[in-house]
Image (tube, rainbow, N blue to C red; front, side, top):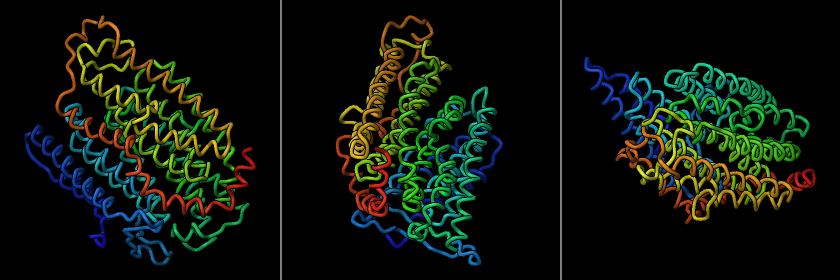
Length: 502
């Protein structure tokens, strides 16, 4: 079964589902919408099964790319349809496939207009997300990476809130401008080496001076996607205006694209430049952690608060990646996965009360534990995971990152630790205001607790968060070989990075 084109199957399955939805016809719009929902759900569940099979068949003892598929695509220029995964990309594929059925379930009743188009947009998005993490040809990666802008732009612009057009264009322009520089870097690397093959480019050994220019061009694209301070301002607007499922996929997967770019391109291909710019990344990461945490404390909108917390958590990820040591890198990847589930779940928690009350203002809530005990318990678990409570996924990622940053630079570790304190402050403040206290508003007295459909997507997410926190080796063991290889690729420059940082 390992010889089957499983990666292509995972990429193509959502497109087949989208084609089926497109073919659905009928005079009764309600029946058409219901059929579209079920086709999207079953397609996404089949894709999830395929990615789990890939995980089961994955060999954690080697750093080599696995499930490789290589077919000439544009032979005149040496461009190939080249797929493969390692321990760094494995779980990002599973995460993408895991969150897509969650998005479809959470939109089941809330999306009532253009339902077919909505489901098609999410299935196309799933294809592109999985494609990004599988691509081993730079051109193929770039096409998947940029094409994701289209369905996300439509999801925000068509099904978003009152300022959806403004937010969609801001999201599109920010990410597009950075990606133009990434394309220039791709062209320079192609003319230097004559190949777009990512494994070959990792061993190309570019001139150190050229590396710095290429690194900056890549940084312009990846920093916007993360997003790093100060190019993060599109994210709160996009989250606030996006439908709940749009926020889930944006926070859960799209923010990981930038960090993945650093892991796949910046570090292995441009190790000298990565070492040179590591102090710069540390400074931006610390500003992101502290500044956006303080901004989160001042928010009145629940979605904006969680959006700013995402910037802070991704600050931990970028700091961990550029320590360029085993603990920091594994912590960064683990935190990406943890944040992908936890932040997605927090946006779903906001979506639950928004569907009932049609407001996200914190001051409009209070005392929900009296009427919604299941919701209060679910919200508490994800809030605790967000602040890094031991026993949850958030603790493992943050702990490994802090160990790695302490080894690289004690000052970075010290300042990053303040982010944990601030994170606990704004999340506990949010939880206390929304869940505890007296239920003084009359319109909250009839609010309903989580229904079966909501429990259907919350329970698996809780299980994932607890398993990652209690038995992290189930995930870390598959990363070890790939991360060790990445560290060995950059080890000649690690001492330079640490000397510069100190």
